[in-house]
Length: 49
Image 1 (tube, helix red, strand yellow):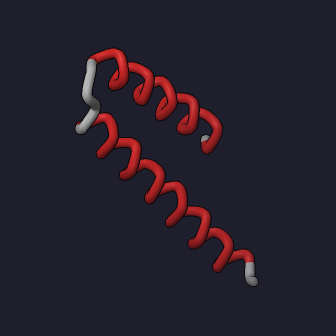
Image 2 (cartoon, helix red, strand yellow):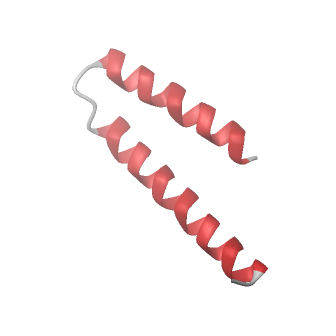
Image 3 (cartoon, helix red, strand yellow):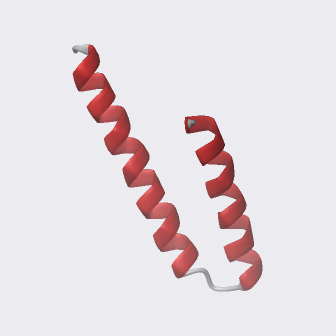
């Protein structure tokens, strides 16, 4: 696989994860669960940058 194809695949995976986390945060049953999901999202964002 070319570097460009790998970059596209990686970007798609990151975007999919970001959308899934955003949906989970929006649908969290409790404020504590929402806070946990926000912390997970922040950790995952710091790894990708």
